[in-house]
Length: 147
Image (tube, rainbow, N blue to C red; front, side, top):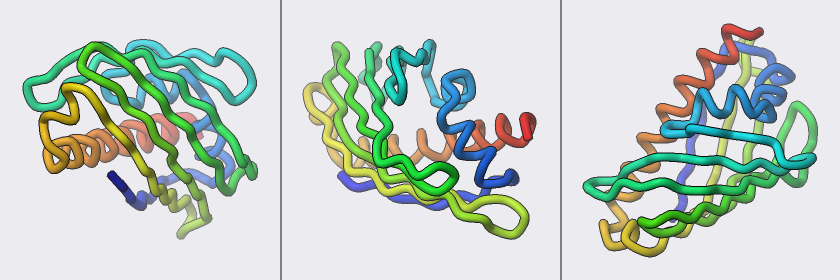
């Protein structure tokens, strides 16, 4: 499944980039994230509690940043496993100056399996888009409060 989006954030690209590398801000912004910790340079572990349709569960995830170009772009590699199934994917993130703030664009390719996949691709895609919108709303607030 491919998910894409663009969001305006009322902060300079430098602040947006730094916030996307801050486990505390990410934990506050990711829906259902109970814990986010840096394990080593550009690597994080996450504990999430989320539900899609009637399937709810806990996930342990790993995130790795690569292809970093500070204040401009990077790629995320995401892998998560839990009782309801698994999620695996990559996301390309681009940050550009935009009218006194930043424009953040992303393009993600995600695979899901297990019980989550049984829900159906339309439901999973709708849930993923809703989670992305929630993330960017909370993230924008967190970055704006910090800038």
